[in-house]
Length: 146
Image (cartoon, rainbow, N blue to C red; front, side, top):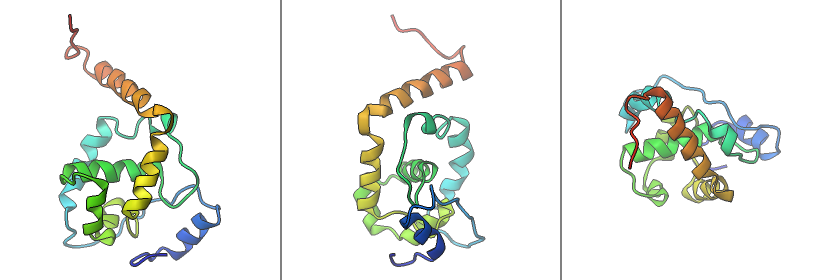
């Protein structure tokens, strides 16, 4: 099950296929490393980070859902982790607190899930839909290149 995994029931349910993905549960904590990334969460959501993920991406049943994975990847970018492999040197339980989970996936698991998300080049469609959304939010700022 992994070191620091204390959501035993959620992990067992996900393991036997009874759970689509676990719902985040935030706990009051102090002194979480990289906790400042949570200040960016409203901006990430307002810019549509999770808006079209369900339309373009699908993961098999498991413990980690689409929302948790996309937020983890966004938080990694905000703290300037350059690769998924760099998560090997971070405390998974501390990162899990940022996402409302007991821990984040191991680097190998995250890499496999990202490969699943990249199947059939769905990222291009998602990116194009996000661009349309952003241009509709501020049509006066959307320019035309000639």
